[in-house]
Picture (cartoon, rainbow over the protein chains, first blue to last red):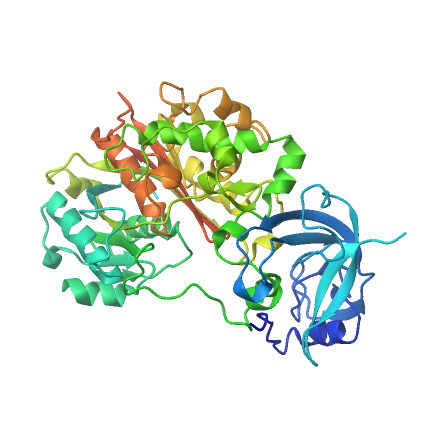
Amino acid sequence: MARMLPEPTPETRHFWEGCRDGELRLQRCTECKHSYFPPRDFCPKCASRDVEVYKASGKGILYSYVINHRPRPDMGTEPYAIAVVQLNEGPRMMTNIVGCPQTPEALVLDMPMQVHFAKQTDDISLPLFEPAKG
Amino acid sequence: MKPKSVAVVGAAETTRLGKIPDVSVIGLHADAALNAMKDAGLKPSDIDGVATAGISPVELAHYLGITPTYADGTSVGGCSFMLHVRHAAAAINEGLCKTVLITHGESGRSRVGAGGFGRAPSSLMGQFEMPYGVTSPPTMFTIPVLRYMKTYGVTEADLANVAVIQREWAAKNPRASFKDPITVDDVLNSPMIAWPFRMLMCCLVTDGGGALILTSAERAKDFPQKPVYILGTGESVETPMVSQMEDFTSSKAFRVSGKKAFEESGIKHADVDHLMIYDAFAHLPLYGLEDLGFVKPGEAKDFINERNTAIGGKLPLNTNGGGLSYMHSGMYGMYALQESVRQMRGTAAAQIEGAKVSVAHGVGGMFAASGTVIFSNEA
């Protein structure tokens, strides 16, 4: 069963193109400097339309998660973590954790994480996260 | 609104609750509506305002033969009915209509005539949450909880005890789905759903409905039932994606809605005799007690563990057994309102003697929205 995938819109296309090209792209207000996610073409803090896309570090911490013991059919048969990472730039995003057992013992809140792009199709790569190396 | 200017004069649930495979969604709305109209001594031709969620108010009005001058289709999840009460009170005071019918019906378990639970892949949730394997509410509503637990030292046993105490209330209620006593160990040994949440920390999935009828306090005196007055109301919304809530340890929508309702009512927390906090999952009463201001952040687990919300406690909470043990069709807010009305009428299965003020606090979506209604049985 094919994994449920996002369908980009004009406002989010830069994000998904970035993932495809191996870059985690966030947006920042050029006036108030606020970094934000999910994508939109104005600043949700000050409503300025003067915003820019930039390449984020791809680093953050494990902020919260659950381990789903009743997998969605397109996600395989084993329990998996549905996590939220807090990026170093400020915004939080939902993701899955790879390169690590999907257990409470291995998944410790506040552990450093780094992005790992998982190619799904020619257009879509998902920004997953793995424990930071070094 | 002016406190006590509008009252509930009709209130009822569907004739049956639980497993109702022979009635569709619209049929559940109608059954609840007919029961509430009978309770109020009204016919459809007496109703000039309609409000509902899940189905359109157009479907409701046409199905029941109502010609309204006021229609509210606010649909923000399970607390929609709290918002409907709030909007209806404003509409009645503004003269848009005189008598508003609010209905809920949901075939949560049997799925008769029910729509699907999905999001378009181009929606924000479809792009930024669905790809990561979220399924139904047990894998979304629960996302912030580990952060809350770490921040305040809350344990799995603390979550389990919420379900244990609510089961004690459910045991007093003949209409509750689950009435047998459970222990913390029972909860902690129940099947894992989405760690740290086990089955007995999650709500039921059942069929049912409920309806309310509101009119002005002035007209309410002429109805057969004891009027239940609206003291204050609040509402707010935060985010369609739980991963984007501002603070994982507290709901902004709860705080804004609760504050507004208390300010409007003019009462203090100490005046509250009875409380309903929408409990789709065991963590919601913890967040609710803190965000409504009954206790300080982090204090809710001890407040519950010390049995303040249990039978005989100073703040009886979720006295029908709640979504964890009474019933949960999907949009549970209507049942919280019904229990508040029963407590104010003095007809609840687990009646709090002498209760004069009741607060019903609801959540919509996954911490997406909130509505609060404060009731009184004194004119």
